Image 1 (cartoon, one colour):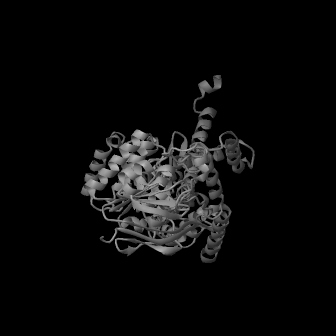
Image 2: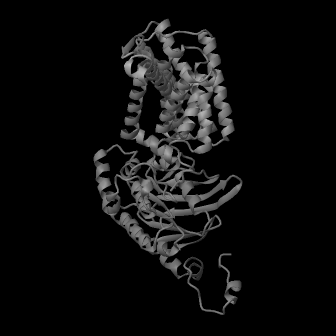
Image 3: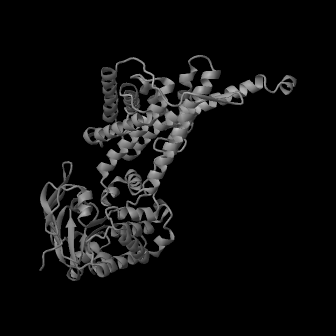
Length: 305
Length: 257
């Protein structure tokens, strides 16, 4: 106690700084998981399909942006925007041509189909862009140091980007006619048909939004993990865990679940022995499933009234 | 008689291998109230689902305002002017009452007309106005039924399909809702096709009735005359004749069997 009192900027201060640093990084990584989980949840709520190719859409988004910035020497934001548009359109097309046909089929068929699609996307990426690891130049390369805590702009940009995107999506879903129609379709598909809501088009739009969210996650993540054809795999797996943790089907749950998984991962990496960084999130998930199987924000067997 | 607004001709509808509708035909005249009566599992709901496009008939045709609509997508059929109040109400539970009503007007592009209709339905069902910003899932069964009817009305349909609006409601609420249904028909000129198990109520408000049994129409007549028929009295209205106890049950057969 005595040493701490006389030495405020010593070990305790450093520990605090490390802790804050970890928290920021965990928050940022968690935001990425949250965004990908959001993609899972949006599609699941509307169509009851689980899209295991979500992580590969993220990878495609990162590559398209990379292609724009490095090959065609476009401005970062322009390339970012193009990637969102292209991959979202691709997501909608995917729904309209392939996924629509498996609605109502056994879940197993859907799981196999989306895993297969993911593998196809990775093959496509390795043929098109090669299997090397690429760096995406971004405007967020600096750091800000506040009281001994190094705030990397990359991580800050992830948190800010996630907040911005969530705000935009929230406004869209609650204040626009088509956004409310999407909610309505998710809640009661049959009734949506009776209202004259073009349910099939709505599904495609939800796929587009979901793919767009994955692109944002991919581009924000790119400077941290670098871009390669497998970048989506690990992220998608943890994001899936995040979605389950939050209660599959809950949008705030997906984000909170993502952040929890991100924080656990970083804390475990710093304090526990080697290897726990990647297993700790799943251990927490297993505990969660044992204690509260419906997840943080989920409801058990929601009954239609 | 003028051309009916809805003409169903010999439809046959299947659930997988099971034939639920075995060649049903019925006409709904402009501005009328027509009811289809039948017990559980008679196929009443299936007839409505076939009309509104949720199920496709294997054979036969559905003609709305002179246009064949069988095998069209349900959202397209709805846009033609058919409103559907589904069995079990099917409101959007996590949207507010107001949002539910706005969804009813999803296909419309005239905000002024929509606002006006919103006031009209609030006039029909003042309780909905009180609860306008409450989630629909938190409403009582009766209020949800009112919401489902209002929501269908928001699209300004020319034909409204009502599937068991009395289901699970108290007798007082049932008569309240039927009063409004009649008002909607009289005041707004909406043609109504009503499917009911509550034959008593349905025959009182409707002009013409069909009786459906195991996928077939077994009787069709004006409601005044249906109310007089012995079979209807006994099997649908529960009015029993005087007679030797015990015997009646074994001897009596429905005349159409």
